[in-house]
Amino acid sequence: MGKRILCAVVSILLAGCMIGPNYLRPKIDTPPAWRFSDNESRDLANTLWWEQFQDPVLNELIAAALKENKDLRIAAARVDEFLGLYGETRANLFPQAGAGWQESRQRLTQATPNAAPQLKYNDYRGLLSASWEIDIWGKLRRATEAARADLLSSEESRRTVVLTLVASVASGYIELRDLDRQLEISRRTLKSREETYRLFQKRFENGVISELELYQVKSEYENTLAVIPELEKIIARQEHALCILLGRNPAPVARGKTIDELKLPGVPAGLPSDILERRPDIRQAEQQLIAANARIGVARALYFPSITLTGFKGTESADFSDLFTGPAHIWSYAGQATMPVFTAGKISGAIKTAEAVQQEMLARYEQAVQDGFRDVEDALIDHRKTGEQLQAKLQYVDSLRNCARVARLRFDEGFTSYIEVLDAERFLFAAELSSTQLQAGLFRSLVNIYKALGGGWVTQAAEQK
Image (tube, rainbow, N blue to C red; front, side):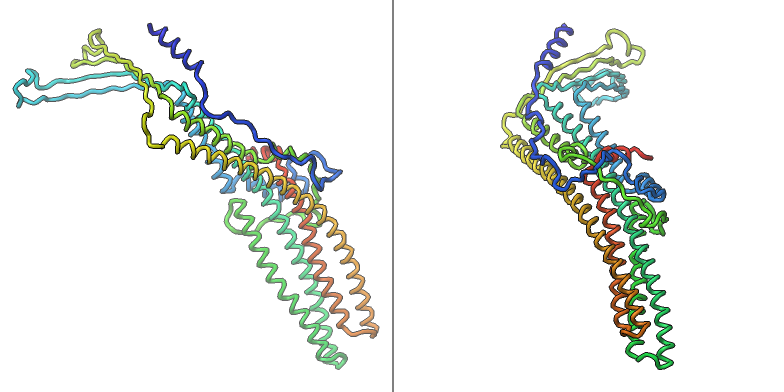
C-alpha cells in the first residue's frame, strides 16, 4: 500500500508543470563595432591590467584595497546572506523531518462528578514527524529559481564593487602622482621667481629698474607662492580618499614611480556583444530580471491547490518502562489540500505586482546594456582625443619654453621690458600644469576603458586575498 502511494506521488510530481513564464534573454540591439575602436587593440581584458603600469606600489595598494575595503567586505557578506536564503528556499522542495520528546506529570481535578480514580499520572511521548508540500504547480521550484538568481545577482554585485574599487584606486593613484608633479613644477617655478625677485630688489635699490617693474616681479612670485598650499591641501585630501578605499584611516600614502615613469597600458580588444558577458553590472541586472520573471510563476501558482503530506510515528505511555512496548506505539499520516476560494483580488494583485516588477527589471537590464555601450564609447573617444590633445599641448609647452628663453635674452640685452618675460613665463607655467593634467587624463582614460569593458580580470581580482 505504501509503495503504491509513493509511486502515485512520484508520478504526480513527474507530470507536474511549472506555472509562469520561462526565462529567455531579451533581444538586444548590439552595435556591430565600436565607433572609435583602436586597430592596435590587444586581448588584454582578462589580464591584471594595472600591472602594466609597472609600479609595484600601485600593485600593493590595489592588493590592500581588495583585502580591506569596507564596501567589498559588505558585498561579500551580502553574498553569504543570499547563499543562506537560497539554501533556505531550496529546502522547501524536500520533505521536512523532525523528532521530539515530551515528558510530563499531571494532577486531575476531584471537583467533578466523574473524577478519574487516578488523580496523578505521568505521560512519556517520543515522536518522529515528517511533512512534505508536493510542488505540483512549480511554486517552490520558481521560488528556488528566483532565490538562485538573487544569489548570482549578489555575486555580480560583489564583482561590480571589485571592478569599481580597482579602477578607483588606480585612478586615485594616478591623480595623486599628477598632483605631485604639479607641486614639483610649482616649487621649481617658485624657486626661479624667488631668485628673480631678489635680483630685482637689488636692481631697484641700485636704481636700475622702476618700482613698477619690482612689483610686477613680486606679484608673480607671490601668486606662485599661493598655489603651493592649495596643491598641498588637495594632495592631502587625495591621500585621505585613497586611504578610505584601502580600508585605512586617513594617512600619507606611499609613492612609487612618478607620472612620467609610469608605463601606458595597452588598449584591450573586444566587440560590443562581449560586454553582455564581461560586465558584472549587466550580468547582475540580468539575474535580477530572471528572479523577477520566476516570481511571476510563484504568484500565479497561488491560484492552484497546495497539497501537503504529514505524518508522525512514535510511542506514548504513562510508564517509562512500557514506552517501547508494542501497545505504546502510535502513528498518524494525513494528506491535506487547500486552495483559495475568495481572496478579494489579493492573488491577482500579487500577480500584477510581480509582472510590473518584471517589466521594471527588463527596462533596467536594457538600460544597463545601453549604459555599458555608452561607457565604452566614451572611454575610447576620451583616450583617443586626450592623446591627440596631449601631443599638441607638449608641442605648445616646447614653443613656450623657447618663447620664455628668447624673451629673457631680449630683456638681458635691453631690447624689451621684463613684462615680456613675465608673460612668457606665466603662460609656460600654466601650460606645464595643464600638460601634466592631460598626461594623467590619458592614463585615466585607459583605466576607464578597462572598467567599461569588464572582463576576466574582475574575477582574478576578486579571488586575490
